[in-house]
Image (cartoon, rainbow, N blue to C red):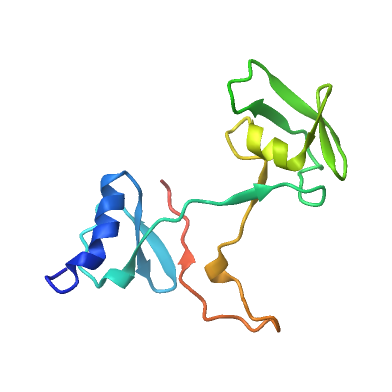
Length: 143
C-alpha cells in the first residue's frame, strides 16, 4: 500500500473493521486471510462473498430426504415437510408457496429453504456458451 493506491484499500479495511473476511488471490484460488497485511496490489484482495440463495422449486427441493424446518420469526415448534407439490409445500396442516417458505422458514441448521446460487463470475454470459476467462476459484477454508 502506498499513497497512490491507499484509497483502493479503504473498502477492504472497512469490511475488515466490520468483521467481514478478506481473501487474497493465490493462483486460481481465493484464500481467506487470518490477518491480512495488504502488501500486494489491491486487485489481489477481495471481501469474501456472502453465499446467495434463491427459493427452491419443485425440481430443486430436497424431496429425497426428510426436511425439518423452523420459522424465522421465533416459531415455537419445528415442522416436518409433509408434501412437495409443483406449486406449494405442505408443512403440518398448512400450505406454503416455495417463495413463502424461503422468506419465512429455515432448515434446522439455519440454512435457507433454497438452493445456492452459483457465483456469476464463474458462469458464461455468452449466449452461445463460450466460457469467460476463469476467475480464481474459491478455496475451501476451515473458518
